[in-house]
Amino acid sequence: MSIDDKLSEQDLKKHPTNPSWTMPKSFGVWELPEGTKGKKYRWGNYPGKGLELDREFGANKRIALYASRKKAKAHTEELNNTVP
Image (cartoon, rainbow, N blue to C red; front, top):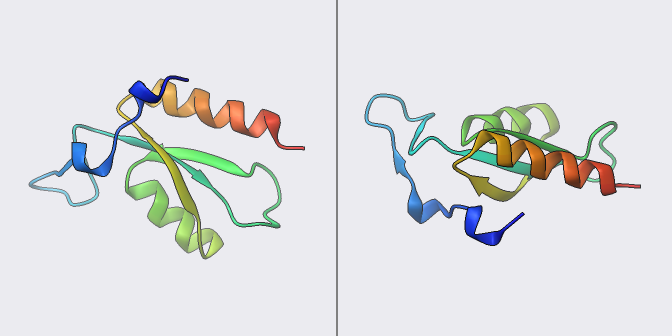
């Protein structure tokens, strides 16, 4: 995964009609809290998925942002495959 593929929040603007969307569309990778059963990393639409994970797990840490859904998914799968 190339660092050049990642976005920063400065690269994004809020969508004018839906604050849950960004322009350009973006996808995050999140690390779940210690002790979470199942997959430790999740990905999804930014910022919506992060808010959903906060409600479900009480906290999370965004570790990457991508313009590509495919790259966010691949990064998450790579991270989950390296978790013991």
